[in-house]
Image (tube, rainbow, N blue to C red; front, side, top):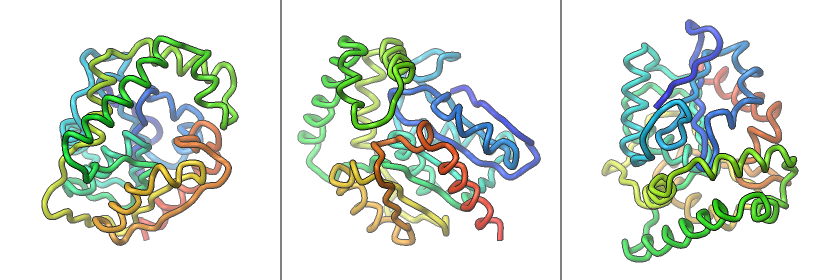
Length: 255
């Protein structure tokens, strides 16, 4: 896992955890907006790290490694932690681990452990795995159909196709299997006082189980619906809105 850092290392820390099927530069439009005010930490997760070797491991292992790295570098207090989709799963596990002082957090379309029999969750993982492998083989043509609802440019879609080609089959499988089935401490206890769960109107039905899980396990969470956008679209498509929201949470957490 390569840790990318921006801004003043002596400032308040903001941690941004990317979703699956992209690299850490998913945040390339928001980093310049946040590094002026914060120490911005962007990990390149295993399997998605162009500067590292190895495949994706698991949500639990990645959360523990990121916690270790932040503590070792004196970043045990986080003004705001943001995680999207797969990154949201990592954020949920880190909140429950309670090893860091996380003052505020955003779980953007984050995937929570499926509350279903293991055989059924394995079947869901197989379905998602095969769908992504088809996209890996189909390239740009299939991606144009998959992302037609959002305002992605041809360059954006070319980037997604390039990332898909770079991912190992093992990384793709472990991503979906782990996001669906990662473990949580029992009982779940989250100290962070300011947690938001973001979801878009386009994914509200798909996130129904995740929202229910968060409502039950992290009851202090505030839910925020974002309109006219697809899953994971805030950082690449609305960076100014994204930065304002993170800046507000980080500022309020310091009061």
